[in-house]
Length: 468
Ligand SMILES: *Cc1c(COP(=O)(O)O)cnc(C)c1O
Image (cartoon, rainbow, N blue to C red):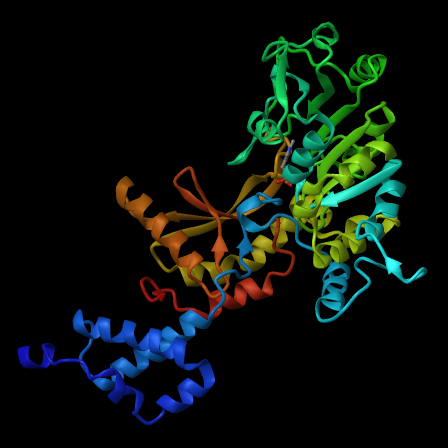
């Protein structure tokens, strides 16, 4: 036995000469195969196996693992519809078709077919943005953080930007307004207090070095109680009196009135511009339901200045994004079919009864998959819009709830974490959330239960530890 275990692994050259190896090299390439083989021999040395058949099987499996893309679809059962870590808005088929049409060949991305001259990539979306927001002009960049950076650097380089202390926002992770402002080479001029800022705070702060007034939509928190903000109208009046622009970072922003869909109110871009705001910025992959991009819309002379900033070249969108964004904007032309055709809006407006039906359709398969260690039932949960829409506003939903049958609290919580890990290791990973001693799988974002159910049907309940 011990001689078996210490058997030396074969030499690389020997293994490469094995029957079947050449076929693997032809199929996957020599580099990849060598990487897998070296890793396999290392496993052998560590004592994980000590025979040729096991080595071959391990190498084949490893080649598959290395070939598999690391970026792949998952099931978002977190209950957060616009989940930044899970890629935010799902795109409508119209956008996917538009992307694939321009992906494989040449397109008129920056080419004016009328004149045969160089064109502007913004032209594919600008007219629609203006139509839908009432803006004079618009431009697009990689995301809303880039939009804020570009606007500030274009309009306030080395000058002061006045902001209320109640609006010095941080948005998930690395977007912090004061930091972005520093990188945009602007001087932050804070006014007011955390809970209350008045119009006269802004009016008194304007000086020769002021470049613009900035308002940021406090999207991921709310200051309640003894609180006071300055409205866009008041800010616009102060800004224009001094011949300065008023810029508003809307974050999500919406092209339509969310309350008409029974959803929490979110600023409507057209209404904000109508209040005298000169430039707004907002994300294309939040409530708009499009691809990742940042939209800048407003006064033509300011947009022109923004577009001429060399940073625009560094922050611009690619043709796939523009194709997708243009397709989504064109869907907004018909408000009557909008909710059906934009997946984000469709998911946000699903009723609790619809979601309950989905949950019930999944219950049996999940129960069988999870095995006897768990009690599975449905649970009235609350979904969130996500991506900075008010965390206070919650949408009635239904989740599949898994609880451990173990009496011991510590083992219970371990079992739940293991179960969550098993769900993440499925072919299409399932992402839920652990809360109140249970694992919750919110069904709001599951429109078709079959792909999810079939995954549970085709993996054994005792799959623990089987994952690569
Ligand atoms: C989300 C958000 C941002 C950042 O937008 P990205 O598209 O994620 O870059 C900036 N400001 C506000 C107010 C936001 O809500």
